[in-house]
Image 1: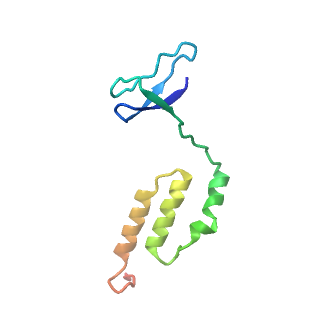
Image 2: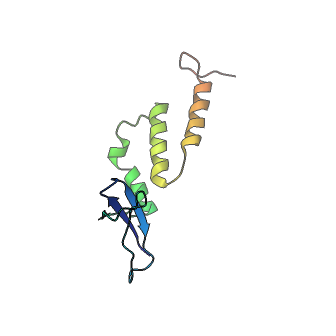
Image 3: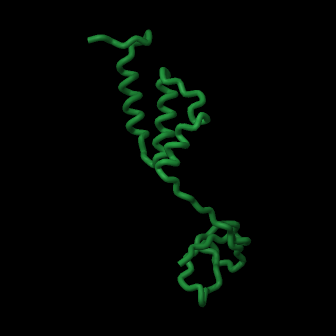
Length: 114
């Protein structure tokens, strides 16, 4: 059962239609205005990467440009990018680490000792 996207020439909106039967398809109509004046669009597609390919892309020198391991903001950006590349939501974890790093530093940049 293919899914097709159409662009309506009347209301200029995009519609996604599920075609249940290719042997006797009903003419596509805009979901928004009902017009039959629609053009089928070329749909985008995704190609999943293997874990090995994702890890290889992270080690690419372009991803490491501007990375400063002593700068928390730089590390935060890199960790968020790494999480996105691996398909995991790490934003809350990174924010928590940034908050704890901010709480542990005094105004002059040194850490408080207990």
